[in-house]
Image 1 (cartoon, rainbow, N blue to C red):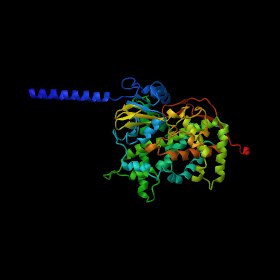
Image 2: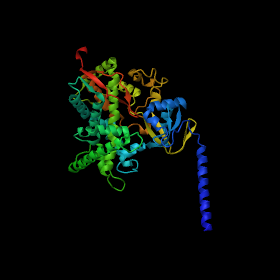
Image 3: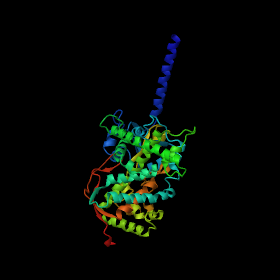
Amino acid sequence: MFIIIISLAVLFLGIIMFMLISRSSRSNHKLPPGSMGLPIIGESLQFLFGNPENFVFKRMEKYSPDIFKTKILGEKTVVICGPSGHKFLFSNEKKLFTAFRPHSMQKLFRLYRANAPPPTAAEAKILKSPGFLKPEALVRYLGKMDTMTQQHMVNFWEGKDSLKVYPLAKTLTLSLACRFFLGTDDPERMARLVSNFDDVTVGMHSLTVNIPGTIFYRAKKAALAIQKELIDVVKEKKEAIAASSGPMQDILSHMIVATDPSGKFMPEAEIAGKMMGLLTAGYSTVATAMTFFMRYVGQRPDIYHKILAEQREVGNGKKGDVLQWEDIQKMKYSWNVVNEVMRLTPPLLGTFREAITDFTYAGYTIPKGWKVYWTVSTTNKNPKYFKEPEEFDPSRYEDENAIPPFTFVPFGGGPRMCPGKEYARFAILTFIHNVTTRFQWDLEFPDELIFGDMMPAPQKGLPIRLSTVDVTSF
């Protein structure tokens, strides 16, 4: 008994010594300035409901324009700001940082397994394959994208005196994403679930309080409904693959036939969860960019007429009924307008990383395991980099050298630059070509409020008044 007591005492003292040494080691870290907020929830409420952009700006002004600490969404977090911060993050991906998804997002997109591992090398290869998201591969999809957009205009826009842009933009982009990622011949099948995707999008950055009436509860319920529908799509696709020996043209088909090192196929529910994540990413941000294009251009007839002139020239030079690669390359002014839209209203305000080792930045040491929040907003509206930053001015992008490096990065950068950048560019420019050559519009509520946390949205859905293009003025 005496030996046991002595052993327990030694063990207890050892644990105490280890904790003291660890605490001493951690105390040597010079953490950035900032506040960790309330116990448990930290500053999550201010971040989510006080607008993440304003949250960051206020703390940059109070603590440091380069870096500050906080606690949001249950995680000790540092926010790295400015072009130097962008460069540091992009150049140290996979060296100091790895991707991190908030717990709410993990629980929504990994419903099939409580603690699902990150994508395997085989899965990552599928998503980055030149067969899907590279410009040279997207070319073969461009004609179908244009055809679907034309049909969307006929079904939902033509003959209307007024309409709400945002819900229609979401219907279009979800249909395009379903056709591209799932290869389904009935994209409207999934478009009928737009409201479910909306709930999931809002719930991706939320407190994981799963009780009726909360944002996360609605998001989880919506995710289950989407997953159920996607599992049916997976089963149908499996049958189609078994009955056909033709080439596979979509990501879903490649997910179905992918195996792990042991030769096992992914479970249907797992595939459905991954596809739900891709569809959400492929539709919401694109729809937001389209919507705010309509908002800003609807307030600037001068810019609209420049876009229309460019798009009419593209249309007159087309070699067929649908857009081709060379047509997209001619839309330089239109893309400058889109860039200015994304500068003033980024479709996604930020993303998270996790420190895989201790690192030092701006004279401060951030411990391994802490999260890093990256946001485009710390440079987009800074007069140091953009003259008269609140002014909508597409001419800023005519001279690429006029914009300092790492000040305008709407798609991120480095190894984790958004792989869907070219897909988004094709979808948005195809929409612009079809909408501007058919319609003129003005806003019913020019001062309509913008709400949303990580993803902005017009409060009323952006109602507009439509009229057909006056071709006699050209």
